[in-house]
Structures are given as structure tokens and as C-alpha cells.
Image (cartoon, rainbow, N blue to C red; front, side, top):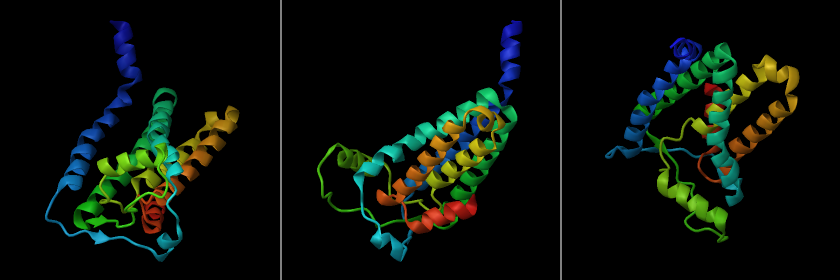
Length: 197
């Protein structure tokens, strides 16, 4: 019984994870709502960025990147976890509010793929499950920036795991690029995410 109490006390900061019960229903409602006119986000720079299906790999690695970084701080650095969670939850809430009052979307996705390969088919599956709406600011970019900030401020990682830090920075850059090369986000969404961060 004492071990259970110690475990509960040690991981009492898990209450933060309850935020997903706010975020997910709200986000799913935004994705499914009808009768709303979406403002189309577009930058002239978008027209010069080619579609590159290979970027589906770093795009999907985002999920592991965010979960792994959150898990690292959850189990090793409670104060760091709270700071990281506060950053993510604040930005994600502001994202939800922005998309609620300012419905937005994209018209950047290609109608057909030049190459037929496993990567383009993965992108096709992504397009089928993720609507081109609620894109500004980019949560992929915002959360990646948040992970990089948290990782860069980690004393433990700075002291003995510099390679992990540098690998995280490189992955974050690839993830951010992937949002534009997959036509999931406009340059404008990326800039907005950095501004929000």
C-alpha cells in the first residue's frame, strides 16, 4: 500500500494529461462542423514549395517526438514537465480559440501525385483522415518548437546528452519543413506558429 501511495505521489503531475479531454473534443468539433465559411490561408511563397511525399516520414515522427519528449520530462523532471505542459496547453488552447472565431483552411493539396509509391500512398491516407481546415497556426510547428525549447533548457540533457539535443533539433526542423512540403500547411501557418510560440 505504501508503494502505491509513493507511486501516486511521485506521478501526481499526471493530472495535466486530463487536458486532452478538453482539447480532443473541441478539435474534433472544429474538424466536423458544417456551414462555416473558411478563410483560405495562402502565401505567394507556397507556390514555390514543391510537393515532396518523402516528408511524410518526419511529419508522422512528430507524434513520437512530442510523446517521447513529454514522457522524458514526465518521468525525469517534474518542474520541466510542468513548464513544457503549460507551454503546449496554452498554445493549443489559443489555437482552438483562433480556429473557432476565425475558421481557416488550405487549398494547397495536389489533386494527383506525380509519383506512385508507398510514401505518396501514406500521404493519401493522411489527406483522407485530416481535413485541410484549422491550420493556422500550425500545431505541428508550435508543439515542435515547444519540444525544442524544453529540450534545450534541460540541464540533464545539456550535461550529458548533447547528441540527443542536436538530434531533436534536426528532427524538429524536418518536421517543420514537412508541414510545407506535404502541403499540410502554408508558410503563413508556420510563421503564425513561431509567433505564438
